Image 1 (cartoon, rainbow, N blue to C red):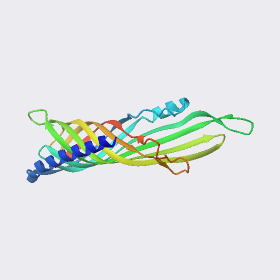
Image 2 (cartoon, rainbow, N blue to C red):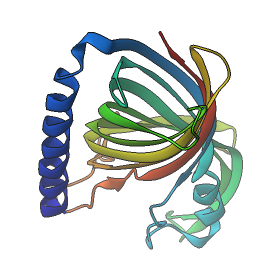
Image 3 (cartoon, helix red, strand yellow):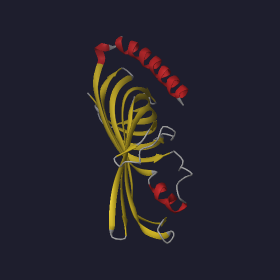
Length: 236
């Protein structure tokens, strides 16, 4: 996995360096750029084999959710550089479960519900290219590469036999981003943008409850997900 990240970082650095040099040659035509989009996201990591079968559907519900993104940056000719903040959110409320609890007279069965709210936040610096698909330049194919940080937070609430408890899991790691999209010109400075983004990252988790933090032997949480969003891009 380290080799994949290292190769990705080096390739992205090379692309950004070349594009920065090209952009420097057209610095007299630099324009401000901002965008916002909203849509759906889907986590790609498989459910761990250690998850009890009765909770598989609970974790499947957490694989799908909503996503939004905000970007600020600059555009020179057909290349742009942005800083983006985006988030994927999912939840599963009051999912029923049963479990075996050890006791002095032998194990007993206890039942309850679990509610989970997950958030994956990504901050990246990005290079974006704009390729016109029409002669009058009203439609552009956009491609994006980015690198930055990814963070994960999972808030969990358990309820059983009239009692309740809660715990939080969190972690951070390196993020690599890539995407393709289409920009449709609505007016001189406004575009409607549709995007498909792939965000790759993993994080070692820790908990606010003693005994729940992952050990060194545990695999990092897979945070990779795909997003499909639509929104507006403003170029001034």
